[in-house]
Length: 424
Image 1 (cartoon, rainbow, N blue to C red):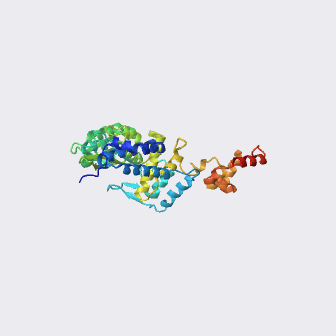
Image 2: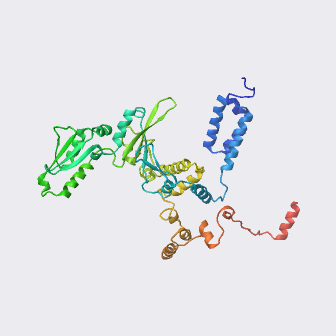
Image 3: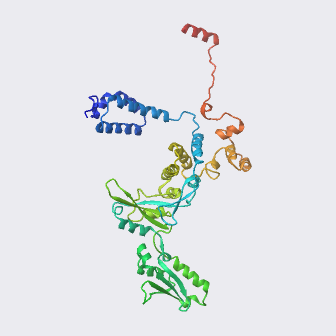
């Protein structure tokens, strides 16, 4: 079906016709928004065609939306953010969810997770990582499994079907599980080398069963046979590390379908150790993430921690079906990270470190704050909202931000009136 003749498919032609309005948009809009607007107009012109009237309408709507989105001078943004997050927060659930159909693998969501974030907990209740792989490993399930095996923490206990003390021969017997050895990518020789490093005694492979190892304990070092000492040695054998990263208890391989039909593999972990994981060959360090904000702060810095806070808070609210403008969450993250470290919203963080004595006392532990401030001789300049409410002052938000002073003129009143009359 032929298009009407006023549709334009050449951006250069259209740009000349809407040039004056584009110039106004360039002056009124931030550079990133303006660049995106122009890019999308170019794309729409080439693909579908635009009339000058349609293009101008789009530009005007973008300018109008931008103007509406700006904060008015004196707007109490903190109060609005608190209300905007707090009210939907009352609808959040208190559940811990099962993850990806894996036994004993849970992830904390909803209100408990949100509280963890704003309280800046050192470690989440269910630490997790999403590990992306490099070009060589992410399209091959076997290569992805190799990386997973390098990361997953594997002890002797994880590959043994039975471990017991043989009192008759004063030895510790380790019976390995063939299926678990294959699943974890571990060999009998690997286990034997690990046991030899413990230096508990000579390690030998059973002649009748290649999957049974016997640690012949050094009798001289034992002295008198002590059941407690034997049990301690058995525990050392159980907990001996074969490979992997200590904090990563489990690794699950997941995949996603790409538009070109290929499968891309990535890893989900139970446990988190960002610094160690980034050093594993095959891991893409530019995309790998953890849900531990403190780890991100320590490894990648405060800006990365701020971004992770915003992303985590937004994902918790989205998962609950709650629509909160991201700028409210950005404000919370800015306040939590403005000092260069992640602080909690509470007595040991943002609220407890306010410069105003009265504001701190209004939050909690009123008498203690007042006594401490008196002992230190602190001065409260009554500049914030809480302290002005307490003393009955003008709250510095909205119209309370500005002050109007009347300055008397040096010119006598009669001469001013004559002058004004002659001007009329």
